[in-house]
Length: 99
Image (spheres, rainbow, N blue to C red):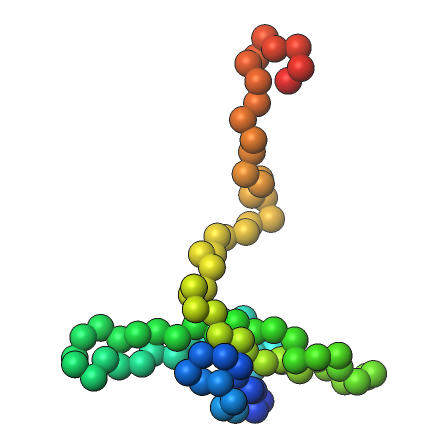
């Protein structure tokens, strides 16, 4: 599998560069989770980093990525099926003329 040296910004991993495995599209994962064991034997702390573009790429070359620290964690994901409807707003009464 291919990997790419990817820089990390912010948080405890600031300034480090790690090899990150690339997916079948040639891009690293959108979020990168790093489990950090608790020295007292408690539950692990998980550091979350989000993938962002590194900067303007050169003409003809693929865009490079970096990871930025996300202290709030990863946003909740919802399955997005092609046949799914967006969240509907409440409509008026059936006998309402406006909607």
